[in-house]
Length: 247
Image 1: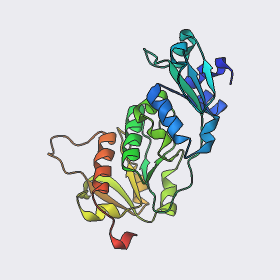
Image 2: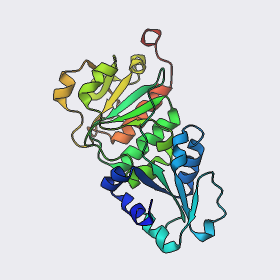
Image 3: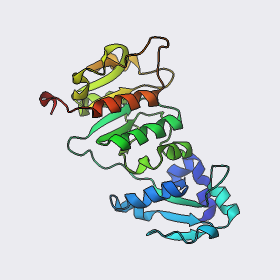
Image 4: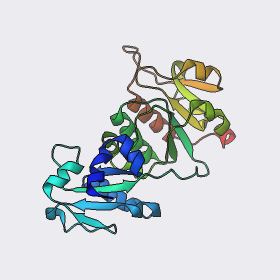
């Protein structure tokens, strides 16, 4: 890609047009390089360095740029002097036993990145994003994921109405649900989480056979941040095995 085109990748429409996105910082580039062993398609990535980072070792093509050019590639106030352009890739098919979380119209890129980081930590889950969700390749989402984007399968533009055809057991969070501490909470194939302000669409839920669960709290407030909710639920799911009936 031409350098002038790389600068445009900060905008979603150009990421989609050119089929690439930007990452920046040593940690993210290291995670990209680790992910090469799992997905050869990532070898179409290219690394950009300022001269003081020219010692960087990478199996990917390297380009040296000046500080002004690096600042144009960066969305942070203090660029680290290392960035990469990465191809947009479709997630791999679901693996045997792999489950999913579904995020309905999530809007905050920090929330999305944090959720991906949690999924990467615990493993064995993919992330499904509804239409009208924040772009998973948004710079803030990518940075908040701390490289988890390269380790968690992500599907975008998944309508909520398609879930029953894919998953026989679906759970969602609701204040009136069973506690997530109940062993049965681990027995589902897909877990639904709603928009930060509006939650899940009641009309869609009414047409689906879902089971409601809740995170026990003090009652002082009526909601949790969606990323915190996913974090707590993924920890609970990792605490023990699924029942024999659900396998």
